[in-house]
Each structure stands twice: as C-alpha cells, then as structure tokens.
Figure 1: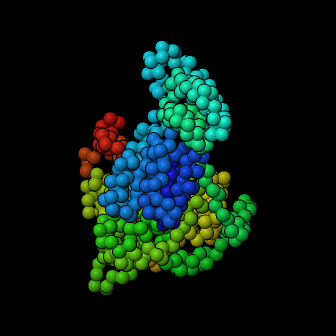
Figure 2 (figure 1 turned 90 degrees about the vertical axis):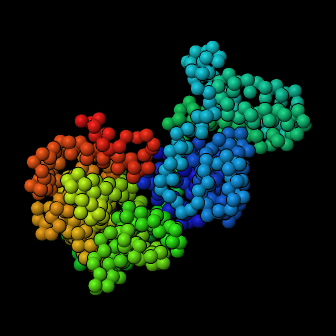
Figure 3 (figure 1 turned 120 degrees about the horizontal axis):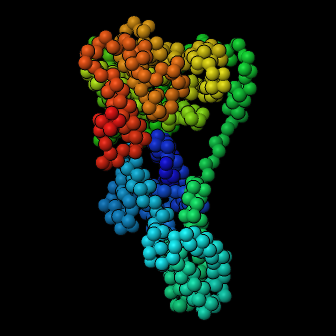
Length: 576
C-alpha cells in the first residue's frame, strides 16, 4: 500500500484519483495549492509519491517541484506530473526537474499503478541512508553499533534545529564552522546521507558571511531528525497525513442513530417494502461511487479519442455498466436486438450522450460500506473478479458463446447492495452488522429489517432499467441456480465463478456462501454444468487453474501486475 500526495485544485480530478487508488488499497491525500502540499510533506514522512497538476489556481505545479528539488531532503521525493498541459516547453522543464513521469489526463489506471509500483520499489526515504553491511565494510565497525550512532545523530539534528537559526543574528563564525563540521562528521559516521549536502551549503554560506541562510535551516534539520527516527522504526513513523473526519449533517446523524439503536428482538421491518420499491423506481440510473463518477466525467468530455478508455471504464464498474446498458436499451428502436455488451452500449450512446449521463449519475457514498473486512474497494474487487473468472470458466468449459454475457452478468450479479448503499446506507450497515452478530443468513436479516431483500430490489431495478435478459436471470437466480427457468448455463457459470472468487479471497463478498462447501464440484451450480462436460474432464486440474487465475485477477485488478510475473497457467503448473 502506498500513500500518495495529490496536488490539484480540481475537485473532479481529486475524487477520480482517490477512487482509482482505493482499488489498490492505496491512500490519497488531495490538496489544492503548493503551500498545503508543502505543509503536508513537512508534517508527514509517509508519502511515497507526489502527483501534481501543472496549472493551478494558486501557484504552479512545476514551481512546487522546483522547491522540492531545492530542499535538502525532499529533493528525492518521486514526482509524477499528471496534467492537461501539453506544451512541449513545460514537458522539457518538467523532465529537467527529474520528474518520474509526465502524463496527460484523464487518469489511466494502469499507468497510475505502474508509477506507484516504481516509486514504492525504491523508497525515497531509504535512499538517504547507507546500507548496513556497506557501512560496516567502510567504517570497520560492527553492524550492531549502527542503531546507536543513528539515535545519537537523531538527537543532534533535533538540537541543531533549535540552535542553528540563532546564528542568523549571533554570527559566530568559528563556533558555526566547528559545529557544522562536527555534525557532518557525525552524519558520515552514522551512514546518514540526509542533510549532508545542506550542511555543507550552510558552511559555504557562513564562510561568505551570508548569515540570513540560517533563518530557515531549523525546519529541514528537524525533518532530518524525524527521517532518522523513521529509519530506526519505519512501521511507527511512516503514517500519511491525517484524514479529516467527514462532516455529518444533523439528518444523517439522526438516521445513523436510528439504525444503530435497533433492538435485536425487532420483528417489524423499519422500512416499507413498497416504499423501497418506489425509491428504486425513482432512481435515474444505477448508483456509482464518487470516484468512479469523477473518472467518468473526466473522460466523457466530448473527446472521441477517449472513447476506448471510456468503454473500458464502463465495462469494469458495476454501477457504470448497469447505467450505460440501461440507457442504451431504453434508447434502442423496436427493430433492434437487445444490447448486452457494455462496450457496444457505450459506443452506440456516443461521447455526447455519455457526457450528459456523467453529469446526472446517482452517486453513492462508499464510506458507508466501511465495515471491516468489508469496504468499497473489496466489494468492487469481488464483483469485477466474478465477471473475469466467469469468462475464464466459459473458456475452460468451451462455451465461448457465453464469454461476453458471463463477464457482464458476473459484474452485475450483486447490484442490490449497491442500490441499498445509495438509498439507505445506514440500513445496509445495520443489516450487515446484525447478520454478523446473529450468525443468520443476510437475506433473512434483510427481510426482517427491510421487509424485502437486496436481491429483490436488484431484480426490480434490472427490469425497470431494461438491463439485458441474461443479466436479469443471473441477478434473480444466482443464489439458487436449480430454480432458474432461463439462461440456466449462464446462471450456473456465474455461481461457480462467485464460489471460486470467494474461496480465493479476492475482494470481499457482503454475504458469504451458504454452507461449508469448499470444493467447487460439490456445489449445486456445478452439478447443473456437469452433464455438459466431456468424460475426460479433470475437475482437480480445473480447480487448480481457476484458483491460479483468481490470484492473477486479484493482482491485476489491484494494479500489482509487473513485468516478468508468471501467467495463471504457469502458476497452475507450479501448484499441481
């Protein structure tokens, strides 16, 4: 997990990058001007990467990068410029400042994850310290002495941060030079490269009688002291900037307290099933999270060149996928076939219509799904993985004509919880909490508290929003494939994929599978598929390769795939 500092005064850009990084369990702190960014970096040692826009309402992104490069310690912080500015002069200036990369908006998930992997692969904080064995070979001292020397240096830096600024007024050349030389020697003896160049610069300025330079030396010296503290104890000293608590209005607070105070013996639903149904009918489309909505808005700006990336974004998010499919099917003529492919639906709508949709998306607040181990990134990862694994199952079982439908249906199979997250987020929290505490199946708790189930809400939504018939069948029967009256193979394949993803621990399912069936061939869905298999089919080989594919999908969706990593087939061979 990485901590990213994002400098951009565009709210949409901030939400988009935050949502994108959350999928990989990274944290993102967005600030609007260089002064705030500087304070954040000076306050926290935990930032692994800075992502900045060039054009800012207050200040300039490249001027901020220049300030970093002029600093004794922060000069090594990796910076990625992600901007709308495509001026070659700006690009040359950025590269001259040794930025890690210069990228053009809108954000690309794969590119962002690659930049994070590159930054984390060589921690900038660690580059300020000599490796222990190399230090021992250079000094002839045992490695066991190194922590003690660094603790002493940490104290010396902290003391110098208080004393050295006084020299701007006191101006004692002999004392100044002696103390600076002593501190440089102590840093060298402890294998700490941080601030050595800065100390030598201070010495040069003192020799030239330029004493005003000492006025601002306290801050970097104090930061150097904390950097040594981090090296001695990285776990407890690398926290990112504190996250501000969300402001909760009086109405939301009352609603939260209402659901938190429900009695365990409550028998009467707290919501009306008919009222919930009417709320579902009034939705303009499928809810999406604020980060996804922002990313969609950034891409759907009327530029035809972004169409491919728009289609990929739509096909990878359950809310956007349902929204675009519904809109395309409502628009189609009577003589047109049903549109079941989200990429085709996005292409038919066109960038202009997609831009209009982007401005009217119903937005759900993902923070309400923070119920460890369940959270939004885990929920999204599970849905996306079910879609990908369902396609894998189709290919493996040689029912290739179902691959496209399986990917979409797997992504949309659990829309009900997303709907409840939008309509009554505190009710969703209460339902999940009650199910955990009582050990009862989630649908039973939903019916007790809501008078209906999220599955029934999703079925109603899928019908009113004109989602494809195959998706409606999967949403309706994925929990009980044997009852399916249409698309039986597809329903069973998605149920098998969901089972595989759950047991591979990819993401988090709001409700775990019923029973303790560990082997996929013992599930009801597999028994439906079994008569369609060749006699030579090897179930054990299938499970091993499916599990390996799940691991690959988990890393890929979280942005952790790197060059040289084995494919799922190679992983499967190792597991066998």
